[in-house]
Image 1 (cartoon, rainbow, N blue to C red):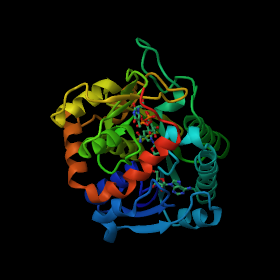
Image 2: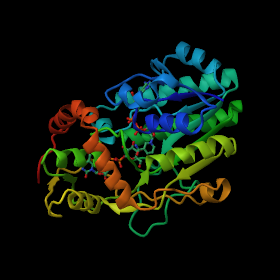
Image 3: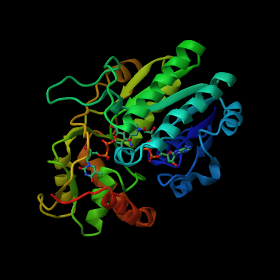
Length: 333
Ligand code: NAD
Ligand code: DAU
């Protein structure tokens, strides 16, 4: 199989490419990535000599058409992915997440290429405590510019499936953690603060709930959908990992031998979603997928160890990420 992976220099995409090259040597991988602030070519170093890397924009219609014409399938990870950035400046989210997806859909339509669309549980909005988890039938209700543009891209995929018959599947996953995640995101931000001797920073009261899944489990699920998913079907991906943010910070503080209350509360995120939770029954029952990282605390400890061992990877991004938070007005409360 010849595979085009968009966003392969980002967090989930780089882990997907590494997993694919390692476990599926029969697959030929081409990565298309614009190397935005979130893309890092060095995340592909372990497999650099076994892939083709194209530095380019998914919204470049001619480039995308040419690349798609030479493959059997596309897995589309590329996106602007951070909620806080979408609040500060929404436009890149519309351009990449909507227009970029449009370019890919037109190309797979023209060349009759299999397409898998990687999306997020945030398209469903948030849940109150005690609400049932999201399913494939939950109505869309996005809260932020980021999640609204992801929802729009999902709708484009569905429309291209129904109107033009493209062979598309979609997956909507919960919060990922693991190696190579940008230090702007919650878990790597706190880990790298702790490595630097600084305090973790919790938005609002720290009571928001996220449904954590290890990135390798997400990527194995993407492969299950790519190989065995039904055309036109959405599959939710999650590993029953609900935890509130304060609990995650307390686990990290314990891992670093610090007191569990050694953190700061900071300004809350505007429109902050309270809770996400995934019911992955369809994926588990129809495709036989199950997560391998059952123990979040162990997965978190391995992630801490990765950031300790790979300071050369994250250090160049750390100051700029913290400066962006300061410029956005983040204050200790
Ligand atoms: P990321 O921000 O770490 O990486 C995004 C990658 O896309 C980067 O390499 C960046 O350079 C590239 N990119 C951005 N704009 C581009 C463009 N116009 N053309 C080509 N490349 C471009 O993101 P991530 O966390 O790895 O997320 C990957 C995908 O998974 C996204 O679609 C996101 O919505 C989805 N998702 C993420 C999570 C999560 O917890 N991180 C959960 C569910 C779904
Ligand atoms: O649910 C899937 C989504 O998960 C993906 O679609 C997004 O691409 C990904 O970024 C993630 O979105 P979140 O907004 O949930 O992730 P983030 O890491 O930004 O924040 C996780 C939680 O932690 C959220 O409730 C906000 C909070 N937070 C975040 C930061 C950066 C803090 O309390 N302190 C922080 O410093």
